[in-house]
Every structure is written in C-alpha cells, then in structure tokens.
Image (cartoon, rainbow over all chains, first blue to last red; front, top):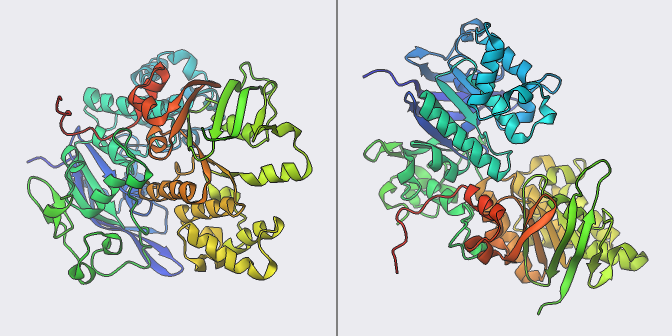
Length: 324
Length: 262
C-alpha cells in the first residue's frame, strides 16, 4: 500500500512557559490520503491550530514537536529551515481565517499572487499565470482584481486571492484553518463550494480545521475530533454527525443551533463548563467533568483511543451507546 | 397586543460621502416581551440600526421612539432613564471591559454611578449579578484577561442587566464564541428575557441563532428591511429571494432520511 499523503503518528506539541512545559497536542495520530478532505474539529484550546501549524513547521521557537509527521513518507519533524523550502508553499499550502491579515495592504492583489508564483519557482509568463490563478478561484474580472489593493476588495474576494496565492505552487495538501469564520454566511457558502470544487478538479487534499460540525460534514469525508489536545473520535463524517461514538462529539452536535425544527433556546444544549487548561488536566478521561455519561471508572482510568470498526475510532468505552 | 417599547417610524440614516443611505425608511418595532432578531450581512445596515436605536446616530428623516417619545427630544432625567432602560451587549466584550479593573470593580462602578446599590451592599449585589449570569461570585476578584471568552460575555451581560433595562440590544453576542459556549450564552439571554422581563433584540448574521432565540425577525439587505414576521414563518416560508439565499447558505447537518410523506 502506498504511503498516505500526510501521516501524523503520536504527534506531541509542547510549549515552554514560566510554569514549565505545557502540552497542547498529546499523541495525535491521523492521516490524509491524496485528494481527500479531512476535517479536524474542535473548540478553542483543543489543539487543532497547534496541530495544523506543526504540520507546516510554523510553530514559534518555544514550541517543541515530538512524534512523526510524514509527507509522502518523508519525515517533516526536525527539519532545518532550508529543508522546509520546496515543501511549504509548494507541497503544503495554508489558508487562514482572516484574509485581511494574510494580505499586505500596500501591494496589489496581482503583485502578491506574482510573489507567491516566484517563491514557487514559476517565474515565466507571470501575467497569464496570475490571471489563470485568479480565474481558478472564481474571480472572473481577473484584470481588475489583480490591480486592486486589498482594501478595495470584499472579504470574500480577499479570501479568494489568498486561495489563489496558496494554489500558486500547485500544492498537494491545502491546510485551511477556519477559512470562512470571518466571512458573511452567503460568502462562506461560496468559499466552501470553491474548496469542494478545487478538491474535485485538482485532486487537492484538504485538511479543514473548523469548530463547525455542519461545515465539516458538508465538505469532509472523514472527521477527526480533538478535545484538550487529544483525538477523542475519528470516523466517516457523514455518519458521525448522525451517530457519534464519543459523548463530546454528541454534545457538540447538540449545541449547534438548528434552522428548522428548533423549538426554542431551551432546546439548545450547551456543554457545561469549559475545556480544561493544559496546566490542570482532569484525571482519567479528560472530558469526564463535562460528560453526561460519566461513571466512576471515567474519573480514574485513562481511556484508550480504540477501534470501533470500519475505520472508526473512539476514546470512550461506551462508544456504542453514545447518542442512544 | 403588547405595548411597543422601542420603534423606528421609517428612518433614513446617511453617512457623509456614502452614495447610498446606510438605512432607508426602516421600520421596526420592539414590543414588550417579544424577542426580535435582526438578520443581515456586512453592509446590511444592522449595526447602524443599533447605533440609531441607542440614540448614537441621528436619522435624516424619521424618528426613534421610546415608549412613544422621540428619543432625539429627550433631556435630563428622561434621557438618563432611556440610557438606562436600553442596554447593549457587544460582540467582543474584551474590548468593552477595562483591562485594569477587576470584574467586581467594573460591575460595582456601574451600580454606584447609577445609585442602584448602597455603598455597603455593592459587593453583595455584584455577587448576585454574577450568580444570575451563571458565574461563580469569586470571579469578582479577577481581571478580564483571566477569563474565557464565554465568561467575559457573561460579564458583559451582567453589566447590562445590572441597570435593570427593558430592552437589551445584543450585537452578534455569540459569533466570537465556541459552539458549546454559544449555546450556553443564548440560553442565558433567553432565560433572562423570560425571568426578568427584558426584551431582547438580537443582531446576528446566523439565521439559526436567531431562530433559536427570537419570536420575530426582520431581514435586512443594503439598508432596507426586505422581510419581517414571525421568525418561524420567515424561515419556513421565506418570501424574499435574499432571505431564501441566506437560509440556503446556513451550514446545517442534513437529515439522514427525507421526511416521510403524510
């Protein structure tokens, strides 16, 4: 069997702080196949962004990465800055939440796409390449967009320009970290459609980082749910949103406001409490203080991430009873 | 029919240098006890509407009426009463809390300035307020940066309700929060409305958030109200194409099976 495009094995991220080492990501393992969309789902403090940044070697200097991150079989952990060239921007590209902060306000969109192309080693026929890239992300009036400054563009247009820059190096993997959170809802729908289209037409693999399960289910084939730095559930996205096998996924699903069939706010069930601080993790299962199904063993024993059949994993011994 | 607390009678608001008015002949009525959702995207005019309802923008035509009186004509005690009775909760409470003051000092100052608690009882009232928004009274000793986003938003709500308002304007109060915390804060706003007789005006771009909390809603596009009615009816049977577009755009988990035919 060929290697998956991206394979994380027992990845750990720790940050040095005044209070000692703080673990943000704890032995996270999952993989992304070529052309596959995988959603990494979690709330603030779940470790999803630290995981995303670790993949591209973008964590700050006081962070330490352990375990293994392989791209096409080649180890990425421990690479020197020069060894990252040829990977970041060319094989792995990023799109972040705030397009306005990803773009430089004093250069035109076209200039910035050209820079991305040069970095990717594509220096010939720049004009044509810029136009083609802008058109490929759904910007029809490419000439006008290219000569515009970021502030002259709408949020949706800015995010499309950022995506054009990400695609400049023809990457195999796009890491999209909450790419639509800052956008209006109709623009969000368009950007998600664009991501799906790029995945289909270019065979682009996408690691979609989001806290919104509905977005994850719309785009991704598989979903990895993180809680307090650990994977708590991984499985087929479409099935997981209807029959989750971890109480945290279940609770997250119940917290999403529903457009139709909603009675009132009383039907909205929040999760009591909040994600524990990495400096004060609970004993046993990290979710147990907030879990409706918690029993005595959950407080004392650390549950393993166990296979529950057909590529589905859950870190709950009651996986099969969740949601019933 | 419930009395109207706050209304606009077809207001137009214009900003200098803008070709199109920010609000064009906008009519909304906030009736006592009936939560109202205002839905729209960037440029819809919803933020201008809030500023105008608070009396911070002057319409070029039309009036904002609080219990039937033109807000622009309020002076002295009447103006102070209006400012107290119509309160605001912001999207990011971090920007509206003084970083150098503890939660207790922030809430205590509001109570003292408005003479809502005697000097000796401020601490006790602050504790009660924190309890009402689901926080531990010990948080009074903390600074804003020591709190989570959800806790800060609850402090913002505690500050607003400390003035015993009749109308609470909440501008995207949950859009910066995680989904599990969103549900908690929406539940809190809903409960406060019912238990304390505060009428909620919720401004949001997420129709599902409005559907969860509001009885009535208006949909705004480019400075105009394009649709208004019972929230449920608007969502089930939208009549304006823009409303239909907004509904289609909300990410939802599709039902597993189509509903069985009757």
